[in-house]
Image 1: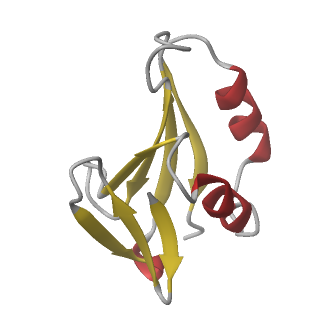
Image 2: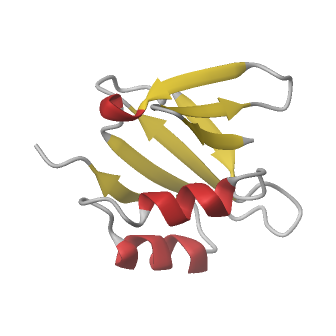
Amino acid sequence: MVTISGEAIVTTDGQGTERQLPIVDLKRVVVATDDSGPWGDDVVFLLYSDGSEPVGIFPLEAGGCQDFVDWLSTLDGYKDREMAKAMSSTEVARFAVFSAES
């Protein structure tokens, strides 16, 4: 599950663990794809702040994902072409679909 709640992006994993990322700290969004579809979660969103490890992770099938993508697409730094490539990928790959402007 992913939601935009006030000034934070809130993700919840399959075990109920909730993580919050303040919107102002969002630096990158990467879409990771693999070749497991249609049986596995073959598209996953990775949210980054300043560190090298993602601070939020959710699959394309997560509740609220389309609302998140709609919101993300309004931001400067959103890369529509990369999102289109990610959504059509059938390989193991990563696509930087958002980078915060410096």
